[in-house]
Image 1 (tube, rainbow, N blue to C red):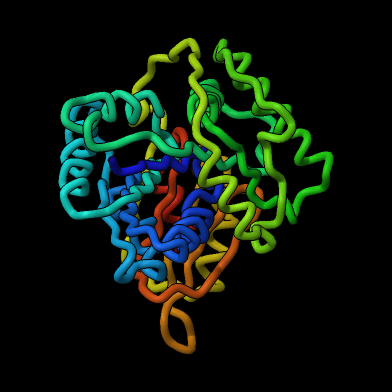
Image 2 (cartoon, rainbow, N blue to C red):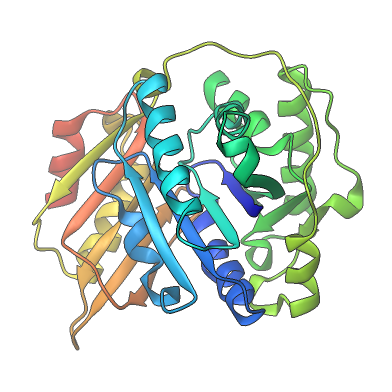
Length: 312
């Protein structure tokens, strides 16, 4: 059977950054891996972010754009059926940051997927600089995306003080309690470590962490009504202009509650730079491929106000 791992986490937690490191490790161990990228936006930016790990031992499939739950499940099921026939022994799924994980488990129980796939590890990424307060919908998703995880990996731990890492773990506990989840995390199940310092032993432990059976009280809401993804093309911004524009969005209340900004800008010396921004910080990093696109994800977004701020 094909082992399928799930990398979960809320918007901007750092799932794709970790996935690149994790998949590179799996390929080095001799696995034939396929990545399934499920991006909330109409343009699948995250699929472009994994190009550097693709090669003879790794490929990628994508699901893009918002759609109703039934359509989304059919798309994911179709992708998994096709991937099972291509000889991969490991599939790594990165769902969008507003993904209700129950949907994924329901799909794996369907025939014939239940005969072809076995659930491997569920690894949840939680920002060590997690905001103190989130909306009720975001708090629920935080609980849903973490409660089945074998391990929680804190992102940006190298930028956070020990007290901030402890506050993020406490916030996670509050979210689980608010969702009436049966899951609680033991200290050894939450890893706070600079990702650049992750060893092969760390990655092997994450690859073998498995998952936990847990439940919660489901919060019924329309994810695509609660959260919005806006796409802006061909703004022709320099990397510095793009970074400054992203920072303006988080400080402009007229834009709504901006949770994540991602996109690309041409690098002055050629190639592309990847923008990844949350309220906690903003980074620009080289990437082999890109396109002039900016994706803004959040709650109660005002498109005109965001466009005005992006254009400065």
